[in-house]
Image (cartoon, rainbow, N blue to C red; front, side, top):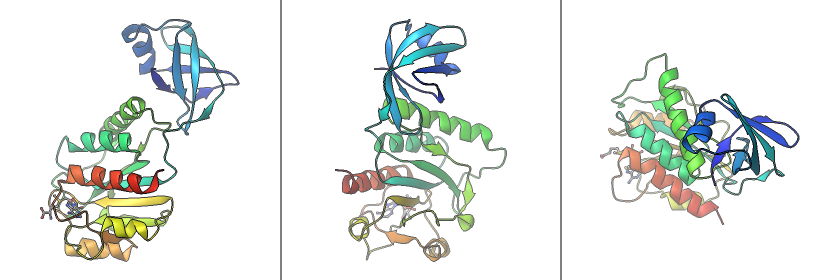
Length: 238
Ligand code: SAM
């Protein structure tokens, strides 16, 4: 069933505007009486019957709203050091499918890509990738892509656990760190193609991060975040 996000919700009606109107009317050719799923972007969803379709809005009669079953109780935020062009879209798409809650692009020493303001265009494009992946994977929320932050300015105070994936960490595995108990708000930090400098690892551990190994194989930056997230979801979801 087709799925759309809207925040324009009244008692038992809702309205979808913007690009989705054209998609509903022209691409999917849906009409009054057809049924879709609506999400409020805060983890709730409902079945909704199209009441009317106009050029700039589609109105719905909504069934009772309920919590989306696709949202994990554990909220994971990926702090991804900026990868080379084109990889961020893949990272965002796959991590949304795997249950990520938010993204923070990180500017670190060895990032080949240096993001300069204005970031809006790039962030908007990444946010659209997140929204499309959220629709496809039936998520109840659209994971937020935040503005980039330089590594030295990262603030992890909102998290119960901060795990930085470091291939030179040989004492603590991700599995062991998770078995210690990780709370419900986890930050994971992934380096760029060139990895982290020792000074950066020191900065991150100084901010409360625990460095963890993802195993003996060296993963690409675009693989490491989704692999780490999948393992965390395996550990925390029923
Ligand atoms: N220094 C790496 C090398 O020797 O090729 C390059 C970094 S790796 C391509 C990109 C990032 O993925 C790393 O900074 C780290 O965050 C993560 N990563 C990759 N393999 C890992 C592993 N086996 N254990 C922990 N983190 C890993």
